[in-house]
Image 1 (cartoon, rainbow, N blue to C red):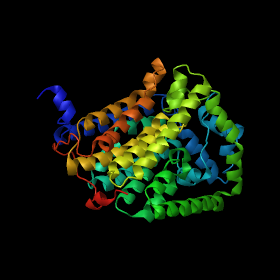
Image 2: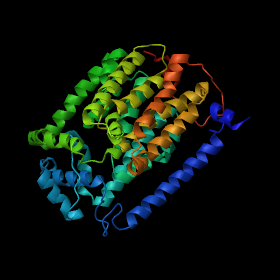
Image 3: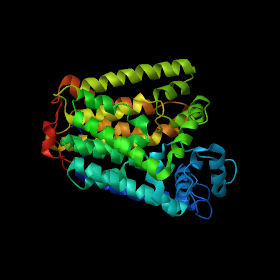
Image 4: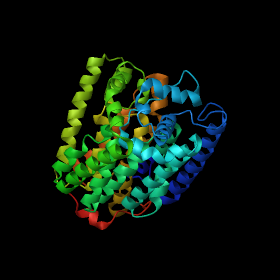
Length: 417
């Protein structure tokens, strides 16, 4: 068999190859994180009292809230002064999340900066592993969550991509086995990052998942109410008042375009004027919305393909997705692995997944060095997997190759609406 046939049929993606590679990757990540934390100024302050990455804003905001001041994280000048205690002058990480996220972060406010960082990353990776294990039907979900390069990208930034993956994965795993009220609860938890959930209501309505839609709506309102009860209404007012500065961050280039993975950022990297960049973004967003609605409205479409279209589409539909948000792709990858156990993989499916992860992992570095936008390309490559099955049929090029792991409960096979 030629190497092209191996690539097409995915015979290279066997358990005896993938598992050792995943374990070696995990060991490498742990080693690199230790090195980066011990190197002064890389990921931590010289005295190891705080991180120097995005997580600093999470920790300082949580500490301020624990001390009885949940408003300061939304007051730019005051929040910058708090961060100067750890960073000194010249660097600042904003906090553009609604108070619901501040509610999630409260336990971290009683820890030291570095301890809070590791607690947050470890807990969110474990939570993601639990949701992926529910999808896979085996404990390999924990290894998948920890070993993907996208997890390392998120960890280096100190960001919340794995938290988003945990909530989205739990929601789709519950929906796949018709636990619709529970799915709505987990969807509501994503309210802390609304730009990643803009397509979810349309998918639920198109698929007729009215109980999930109602559950998500009610639970979302309860979460907002709980945040008001715990943090006070002033935090929400302050969050609303900083919206103009938040909008200017992208418009004025305060965040480098190569960190984004959106169509508008990619067009901007290639030199397109803002009107053209956002025009293209609008066209793609509407196209993805139509694709999600059409996919979720078809009962014949496998749930794994619906999950993939929704997840990749969510990344393409918003202009505010960044490279660490690629972490949520681990959810549809787990669905594909579960289907692979049951049905085998379609031609090129494993290769397209590998290419997606590769492009997503290197998108930030390549974008910074060459202004080539690989982020949107990674999403489009990933969309090719479900679209090929939807257009050509679920059995196209099916190959029953040795499985990597198990699969989701058989009850999910009937959920095609």
